[in-house]
Length: 133
Image (tube, rainbow, N blue to C red):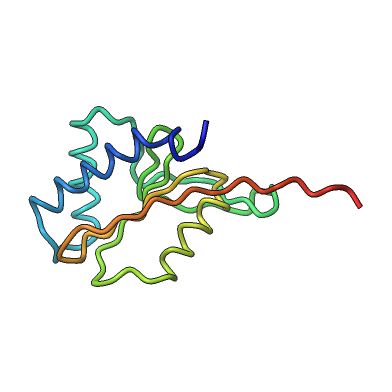
């Protein structure tokens, strides 16, 4: 099964919840307000999630520390929130790096700071096995 399809139902529900939050609040609030509001909507939607979850960071398979993530949904989908005027390629790189460091396959970057809700799904492509040399 493709990763995209494997997590499509979960990411779709999270995005729908984020749309409801943005429709209700609009832009202009601090990230923490959107985070709390999204938690309310995801709970109403029946999603299983953790907020501000402390997760181990891995470097080449070695645990090198930890960091909190905004949300971890269904123990599988990383959700990173922003409340910025614009998302840049640096923010995209951030979530790609998080997926690698947290050893997760799928992530969502959601920005509440623009006039319209912006979101992007990220899927970590499996690394091809390198032959022994």
